[in-house]
Length: 64
Image (cartoon, rainbow, N blue to C red; front, side, top):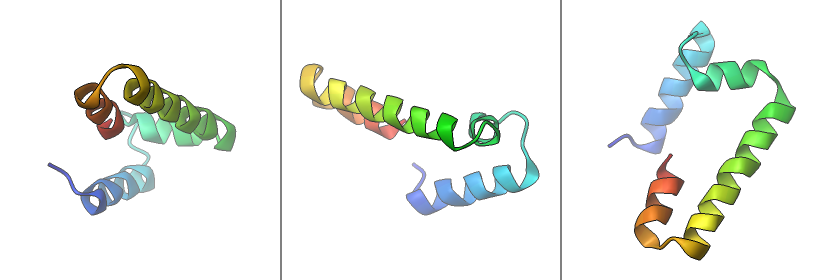
């Protein structure tokens, strides 16, 4: 399992090199509005899972 620090280091490396296979790199290239929309989308999915789908689905959604 990756730690937060591991994930952060991976994302820094991918963005520094412009990894074309990285969804994060593509999203960042679209700008702050696209990033904000993605954050809101993921937050809503996590909330809906917590509200309606139970702990296992919530954990899965939050971990993505």
